[in-house]
Image (cartoon, rainbow over all chains, first blue to last red; front, side, top):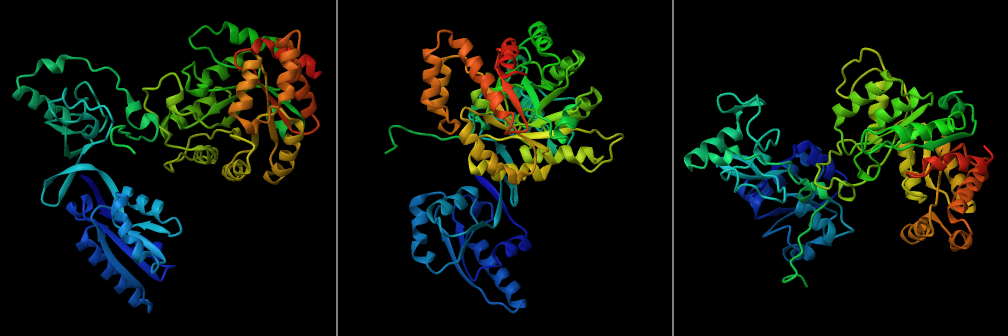
Length: 222
Length: 285
């Protein structure tokens, strides 16, 4: 999933301050799962904003709505009926959702209420960690299903660096050395031979090296 | 007189672009530069122009200075992060490079190392600001430098559009002391641009591009309408008995015409640096 964290309240307040009627839009997908911008967080943020502006002696209208999927034009259409009554939109979706609203409603200012972080997975309750960088050329098949691009601080492709100590990364004892994890996994699978192979310099063009990316499925595209 | 002094004295500066080799054979570069020594005020060394891997501009610049020519080197953000850029800038100063041009870097996707990872940590205004910070005696992290570098720094314009002028204002505010424009093929439209560029309040150095063939002229005319390369100009080259010489004449005439209008000129020959002398001849320089 795409993970996100709510922005500091002060920053959100500063962005919506000039406006009277705010449409606060959450998303039922990833940001709900990582507890950053779902229906519950929309409600909490609306209350926090109301309280703040009340202490300043100002009342603002906040309309709360949570879409099924904010990155999908089909669902964003649901905002049509509310847009006339809004001076600005505050989106709690990831950057994709914010941009979809900006694209659909060109005349309305849109502000993000969350910082989109990374593609990750839940490690345990309340903890999410990066798992994928969308490099466009997946090599998980070679590395025992553990990604050195997303999970090694240096994105090393041929084993750990000298900073790997007792299975941890030199940047922090909290961070696992991904090459330790890969080695352990290859060993468990009996695929240690794979570790001897030299992986050549990666083609970064399939990632951001080739500029903004797009997928066009001829069989589906209209 | 140095490039910086000529620029601040309002003297017309003649700059020639000199490309580094793809490899370590520097004989052509050295020979071509000797041919124009004393005839230009400085040479500009591009750094992996168009994303093509070559010997770095820093080495090329030092090499030119060893030949007794003042060098101006390109710097840009695609290939180096803020540490590498700052380190190279300090190195450049220590090795005697006094002039920089902060340029736009072509996307990795158009170069010859398409697989490479782009950096793009600093954009042009960001890099200009970083250079200013170094000159003030600090690095980008705020740590004090033991000895501060000193540069005359310029920037480029991507086109003659008004939006580029707005961007140029940003770059000047960030520290650019002169501006290099794209190639000029039409003096009249350039003079209109020069009037608009007055507001920037820094010397403007237009580029004169050597048209080597009708095909190149045709390509520029169709792919870059803003360049104002007219059909008449293409016809002139096409009808010439010696097309190569006609291109050189056109370049020389453009240089001569720009003398009264701009603060200098950058002559760009893209691999035909051995013809720079001929262009200077026709320009009467």
